[in-house]
Image (cartoon, rainbow, N blue to C red):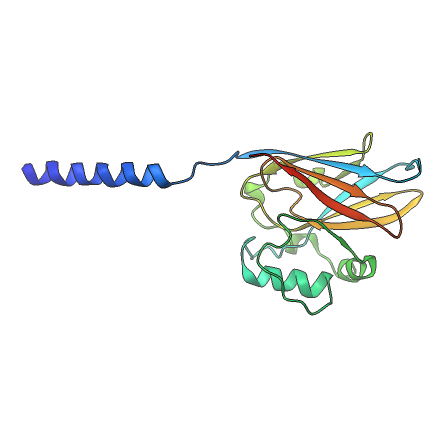
Amino acid sequence: MQGLKNITLLVLMVMAGAVSITPAQRCGGSTNYIYIYVRNGTTLVNPRYQIISVSPSELLYDDPKLAKIISDTFFADGIERRRQFWHMESFILKPELVEKFLKTYKAENYDPAPEWRRLKKEDFSGRIEQGQIDLPTSEMFGYPYILKIYADNRKPVYVLGAHLGGCFPMERILIDEPDAKAYWDSWKD
């Protein structure tokens, strides 16, 4: 009986120690507020967005193969990038590289872990209201997506980033031609 008490006490001490050093979940999920800007008072006519999943279904977001696939497909500069390089920064992509990828694109091949995603597949496109897109995020959903922003009077701008992942993200995207820019604006602590 004494041995059982000692084992129970040891297990409780190990559990208490593990809990004290294990980080808590940061947020679970939040909202990515994406602000769209144009210069010189230009008004976008019928502005819309589309989210395009570019992570092959069989790969997790932190798989090193994913970083290579994304680099080779959308950058064509031969630079090897680190894992999840799209997670803390957004990148404006060259339209010709995205459009080449989309010619053979099949959405069913690019939908990793949909059970973790807070946004339903049918909500992957919509209107941009008052220069803003609000997307629900999940803390552990750091997959790369292309956010296509377009309007009747503008060519599409393609932005690579983890638009559906993270805690308290906010992006600002300037879609002026040819100087489009994308910024991660804040991450709350």
